[in-house]
Image 1 (cartoon, rainbow, N blue to C red):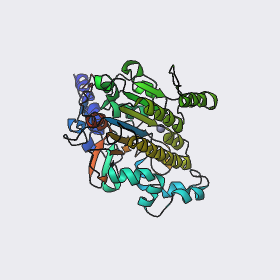
Image 2 (cartoon, helix red, strand yellow):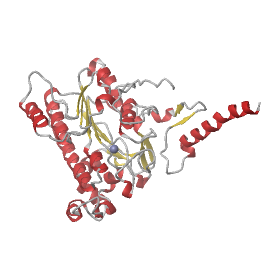
Image 3 (cartoon, helix red, strand yellow):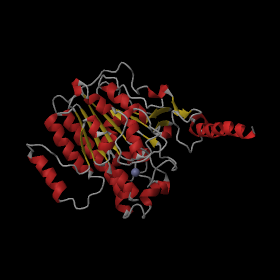
Image 4 (tube, rainbow, N blue to C red):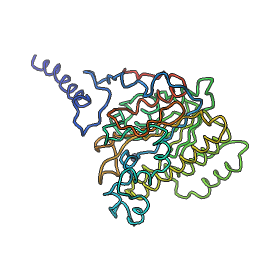
Length: 390
Ligand SMILES: [Zn+2]
């Protein structure tokens, strides 16, 4: 009898503890807030309020959308520019004086403009930038892992999946918004993905989704290659001697730009990866330089949009990241047990979007809201698959 009671009560105790650990109301600052908790059977209970789109319901749709991510790029650098401790630390920033001459200034506003001039002079004025925690404006990932695959899954499928726990190259069972759009007649073969990191064909399930994905050191396959395409293939094949899982962002950008010019896709996703790579290597100097380079690429892309008929005045941008990172000397890493890893940021710009600039009021957004926002900006509604446990 006694044994039976213990058997009946023990799962309740375990599950209650699990549920409290994941309940945003019970959480201390050190734990990432999540918009779902767990029931007694360890099944996630989603807070549907947080699945609502970010933008007003009556927003005028645009024809095209470009989504850009900077892997593992912190909100701290986006909003404050170079960090005073990290840029002065010779272990993280060799030849610190040179880097300071480029990216240091007394105020956060001056520093961030030095680091990302296009972002702050154009998006900071004409767009919307969420996630400056100085103003208590927060963006978080809702998945508990704060790693890349779980993050990109959440961003594009609209739900955190507790079963996706690592960056392993496993085909994603969840349907994503790019695939959803690509299967609609209006967007068929008008969706294109270019990423530096070679795990995206699995995250976006290339086999099932049929979305064009050029990732890692994929070469361009086309019976009639242009001069630019031939040059890109030659560079990838002949001049990159040390191939890692992340292609140079500059190459990813060149491939994307060439494709955009030629085929005019309506939905483009550009995934840059080197910021995270340099951070893991503990190279704050290279991390800053890469953010600065991506800012240039963003400027270049926006200029292309503005000067291309069909895109001009009819294209929105979404710029974000997949996860945050630790603070101070933990900045090199991220994950479930590193404080700050769930903290991200989000920027939007385009016709119909109010030019609010940096959002300076209390607020909370989650990465999972991005999928529906992508669809909404195009005047569509993404019907996502609820996981079987929902
Ligand atoms: Zn990483």
